[in-house]
Image 1 (cartoon, chains in turn blue, cyan):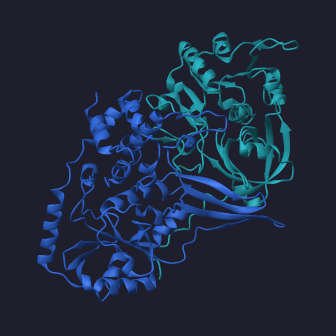
Image 2: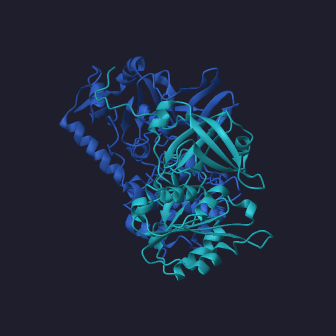
Length: 339
Length: 288
């Protein structure tokens, strides 16, 4: 179902939603825009296309207590932190980040050994997406199978029509939002305008990559000196992976003593040398060459094997934020050209 | 607000079961390897826990964290679960300092064990080196159990350590040596007084024992250098990559394919392994 909401009404709607939901949206924090919990609609930054941090933190917090433990007279007591108390709403997620969330769903929400921390948050969250009228120069969603108006993964999808948003409900959760009196009927002309916006946005974006050829080349490049060249400029800071919306690696550590404390998981990255370092001193990925290879191969080869899709959604954060200007598009182009 | 769909609530795979250290036993004369015998604190955990040789568990030492260890006992053995731990880092050092009666946490069984059904009706050559003999102990003990013995053909064990004092499970090895239905070849790197068994590195002993590849599987675990030099010997004997299995170790955290740490190509060692055939590993980065 499609409806429309005037921009002048948006903050009133969001103020009403804040009563029912914990609301997460792009908002300023320490000089940049990121997805975080907001207390008032005024905090939302509307013109940010790619937030510094992706919204993955809503479902997989950068730091999360899994459980606390106490050793008392009755033995061991564990108190899990898996329950989600309030319904959540993510407002203004971009299609690339939703594609990433769909990849993470397959990793975490499994029939065997389901990650209840992730799955509970996912089940309790309504995701409102928004199309990208003016993609950035670093955006390449269309190259990796996505699109600036791709709707998968959203409960409600918004298109910015200038004075109003066209809103399309894609799930029951979305229908529930659309039932709010702030939405009113949309017209055929609105839908036509939305299609024109999509067409205009697509004109700024690259063509689809030849994924199969890239995968085949990667399989041939395992022992190639190609990776020495890539790693020569990489300083191993890990920003490309930590701020990647698809990357989901984490570390688990205990904080506390033998008697009481908590088990915590923290985002981690395959770009750090300690990531695979074993207690014996053996490291199966001893240098930058294996680590940059892992990042590229996981995204453009292994995910195709395990999920049938890429582990890159073309958000361009790694391109924007790499301190030595490594550009994953260029590396992938070189892989495609390599023989 | 009510949820429309209510599926059966999945259990939390990150919560460890409480375990009590029943007994500890120093395995090697350098005091670096200790076997911990663990019993379940809760009856329901004990009855639910079913495993096959080759599977592993995450052991929690509270305050230090978790680390993965192969199960050294066989499901055919009654009594506590056995884990043999090398003292190497922060967690294993703390574990070595713990004694009988103390509490640990345990998650598992995790991963896939040895492909017993594939091995059925075939000869099995078990090749181990150093302290990488824990799940091989489980496997051998399982196959030699009187309820299972008839399901397998000839069973050979080739096991080497630097010195006699560094061999694990000495009593078990002695018992296997007594059996007419098992061929046990124990070797050490260099001759010492009182040692009347084989002398030489595992790859050379494999070549000397020369197990036939016909209708056979080889299972090999050991230090990378031993594996590197043993694989060509097996190949020379006619073993194909799909006839050679190994159990891999990697640094792990979650043990259930989420934390991303232990992948080799598209496989996670925790969830898709730790047991792999060399046919599966062919063409993947050698990140192990």
